[in-house]
Image (tube, rainbow, N blue to C red; front, side, top):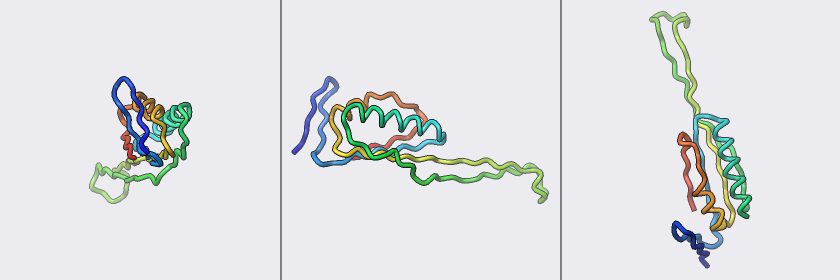
Length: 116
């Protein structure tokens, strides 16, 4: 069984009994949490069952910049670069909720991966 929903931009087709997964990635932890909460709020208002947001493992690396040739550690600086990740599972997504999700304005510096 396939559910279809006709809207002005086109037709959204969702296979029955399929889950939808949204994966978010960003360098700013506060921004990714705010965005995940906005997505969850929009989906719940439109009648979808949601699992998440789930915090995934954070990728990070430390970059050391040396200013002097000495080994005393006085002439260096370290910067930390972290990649924060969140996962939102949508159980039996409703076409109305998917359309609302596609219309949502999100920040440019967040990578979003949506899969059925």
